[in-house]
Image (cartoon, rainbow, N blue to C red):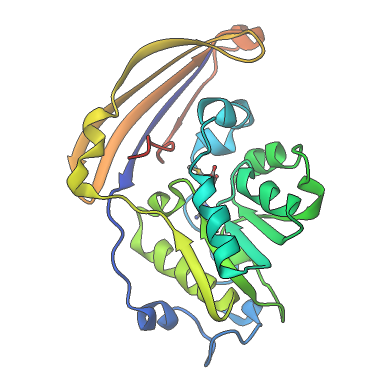
Length: 257
Ligand SMILES: C[S@@+](CC[C@H](N)C(=O)[O-])C[C@H]1O[C@@H](n2cnc3c(N)ncnc32)[C@H](O)[C@@H]1O
């Protein structure tokens, strides 16, 4: 039996950040200078991604549990509206948007610190047309080819429970973008109190390979802007004799509001 217990907190509101503050994290005297390797943030390490993205046994389940990607329609429409040709998908995970963009002939860079999720992404159609980068924002240098658009889909912005990591990420995005480029991400509306419907009683599901899984989720505290919760995934199957358990301190993707 594999049992994963994930405890963590998710930021429910994103601080409004003055662009000049983000600029303060960037060593460039002007933006778009193209040399990210000269930046003090280059290669700085952030919090490890959650096991739900980084553990190969869980990363392969991500698209199964999160199969409704109607949220990506708005991003595709935005890409068209903005006429973006060169795009960074930051926190691309299993690459659902990146491969859709690549299929349209766009120049896409998918960045994610979870190797196991990138491995899933790399097996998708059109994955060979995407430049995959393993790491967080601090490892990407776009050189002298600034991008038109940076996106963070599916609650990526909520993983930054730490304000320092968030500001560093914004500064990096700013650096990659061409003048008048766009950064698009999602945040939540705390007033809608989405966490009140997050609890999931232990529920049996059959995975695509026929194995049985039990999933549950419990909100453990609400201390805005952070909401903490625990989620447990149990998968019975060939690895049952190992009885492995992993604990981690970051949240899994929470339900959309
Ligand atoms: C909820 S998933 C969303 C994945 C993908 N964008 C999607 O829409 O399916 C959050 C992603 O953020 C990634 N992540 C965690 N920490 C990160 C960081 N510091 N910088 C960028 N991405 C990060 C995780 O590895 C994970 O793939």
